[in-house]
Image (cartoon, rainbow, N blue to C red):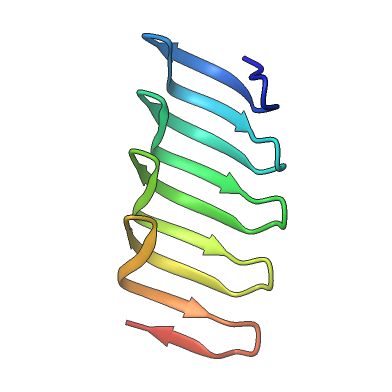
Length: 103
């Protein structure tokens, strides 16, 4: 499916909504590959930003939620729990200079 705004989707559908495994490319160059449920990222998926930032983890109704790994464009990273698209709960954040937060 090619949308007028430049967004593209290839994958499964149910009731005219993205549902099941699919790949989506956004006009800004960002991509998502993974599971959809009723039109939103849901389940396991990988979102990649044009600047090479990546989130590989669990999604709930379009939000990062559950366990996931985020790698920033400047080589920092966070591995841990997410809630409402924010690091939440136990996790480990590391920075390129070797600094590390765990907790």
